[in-house]
Image (cartoon, rainbow over all chains, first blue to last red; front, top):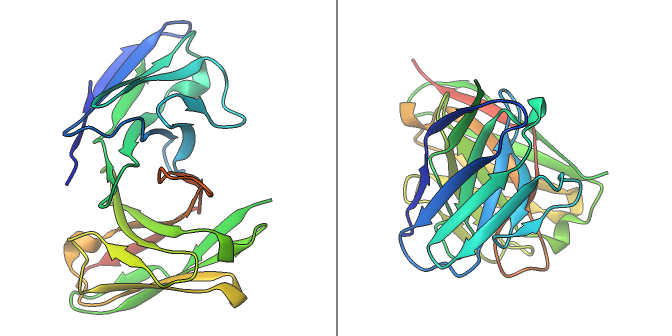
Length: 107
Length: 121
């Protein structure tokens, strides 16, 4: 089974900051990496798939990169609505697995 | 507009059974692999099960294998998960999710609002 490890577990930032979240897979998953955003009490929202493809309707301040085992989610110019928890997910093989989440908090 | 609406959650005693349903609208269910993903209170996301578009292929997380059964009725635009021998650690919000198709990578472009299942005596 593929294990997904995110870092950091939480991060504090201010509106306008740039934030980077990393995700590491326990084995090569090519570009089959997905990022979701989740706000309290809500279902997750798809942000990025195939490591770097932005889902329709997602602001361009979100970007993803990486391949193989190491991936990053970058949010430039943080907006108030971006404070949430972010999860990565490997889309390569079953069982599908998620990272433990990164909580992005307001500083 | 694509919508996924879960129903059937609730309180059940350990060892009991429950069926959660997901009503799909705004797209043709028969063309999509569907998945269940759960989230225990205050915890992260855990994939539970996947069912192919025709229902011929199913796969489960080890944590639910042999206890949960996923099924679908494309004519009724509905997805189901039958949960038996429930345990306290099955307590979670269960999300119905649509897998983006056609695509090789398995990612979920639409999620329901979730159904809370609580296993407790």
